[in-house]
Amino acid sequence: MEPYRDEHENGQHKRKYILGIIVIVAGVLLLLSNTGYLPYELKHILLSWQMLLIGIGLVSLFTSESRTPGTILILIGGVLIIPRIFEVSFNVMHLFWPVVLIAIGVLILTKRLPRRPWQRRGSPQDNQNLSEGFIHEENIFSGGKQRVLHQVFRGGHINCVFGGSEVDLTQATLAEGVSELEINTIFGGVTLIVPADWRIQLKMTSIMGGFADKRSYVKENPDPSRMLIIKGSTIFGGGEIKSY
Image (cartoon, rainbow, N blue to C red; front, side):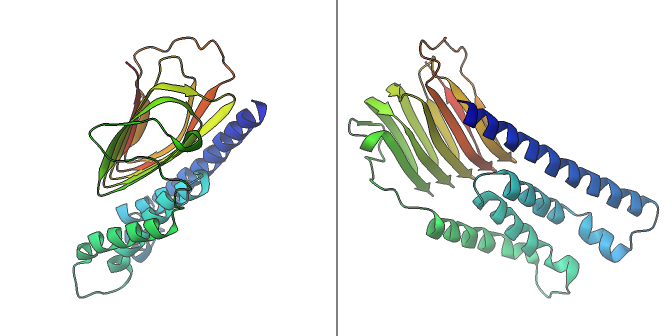
């Protein structure tokens, strides 16, 4: 368990330093602006909501294990800041959705394909043949509602872009040792329903969204060595963990 603890602590330190540097830079820029030392040409670029998107994207890029959310935010912020740098003859907001769609297309092309697809889609479906105990779920402009029955769950990945997913794991058993589930949502959401005694550690990066463990109570697990690490990112979306 020590390597995972050390990795988690290193990630926290990395986030702390990067966030600290960005806050200091923002404070210096604001100080220069208020004292008149920051030229207007730079002020209306550096102190803008578009630059805020780029800044959040940079934080995500360097602190999250997934590069996709940060890249998308930097791309959107970079396109929308063009009118503040160059003279354009069109409304830049007309570029927003095309850029979002292009970013989603890049996401589709660069995401790894599932090694062995498992039964998907339904309302709801019972899956008794979860391949090797791993979930590989991709929902883009769509959704899924799944129930995993009597399987040893080992992790996998769930990606939702303008879509959602609900996975019921209450009848599953968590594999021995540490398992990892990667979840990425962009304008989407994921709900996990798990047994109340599962030991779960969240390592999510959230931007204009959130991911929370909303179990009303957590039972003591008779085998504390079994743990599920949920990592990934949520952008303009979210997720939750529940139990019956």
